[in-house]
Length: 112
Image (cartoon, rainbow, N blue to C red):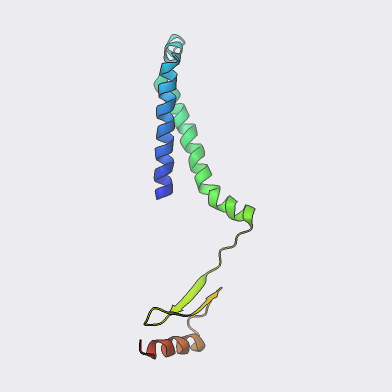
């Protein structure tokens, strides 16, 4: 959510700067002379700017993982009643197995 908020905020700031630059450079008068208006220009800039930014946001994590060869692997941690990590491991764990259930029961049975 924070990424989307920052993306929208940045794009709105770009629109504000674009609007100010057009007015400072007198391009709004040029646009008016040629039958165009600043609102239309800003609308086109917003559609393309926001569209491109959302596409970039959507694929950025995927591209980074692919480029760096990163693989996300589940990490499971077993914590005792005192808050100490007593076991942990990468990968899939069968939490329905008798071995796992007996281990958790043994950890839970120990007093803190």
